[in-house]
Image 1: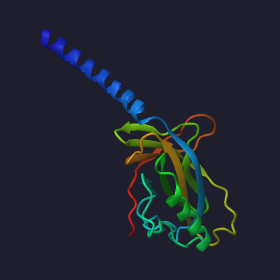
Image 2: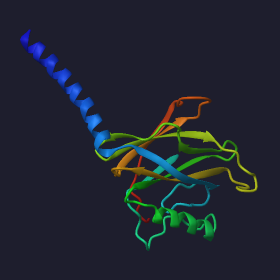
Image 3: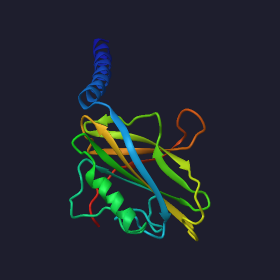
Image 4: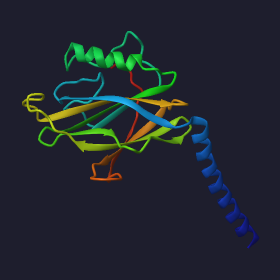
Length: 201
């Protein structure tokens, strides 16, 4: 009986410690705040992110975390959207203030007849799930497309690039992609996408 009571006490102590660790993570690391972002869409037959999604990719979602700027001599994006747009996106991912935050790059693929894009769920902020590990709540939302933007495409890829501020920069994380819902709250979880560190292919 005494051993059982001691085990129960140990379990309660462990649960309390786990809760404290979560509080400590938040206190030490601080809030993660979404500051700004840009989005674009292109036919899945072309590759906009080097190493990114195309029509032949096995995965439906792909995400990269940039805790620091990529090397100056490496371009993250291709000219699939034109040279000017490539320059703008590369300038942004290279020029953010990485002393105060980090960048998240996310791609999603969908049929041209029913286009969607993955974007942050507001007002839900990212949350710490471990030491220097975070989870980003996203929604897979319907997107209206001008037929002239992606003519004759069977599938499209949407690309999101967002900058977040944080007292401590996460080095790993997951993007939790949920179904779109009307009103408050999040829909059913579609997939938890593990972030990657970007490297030139």
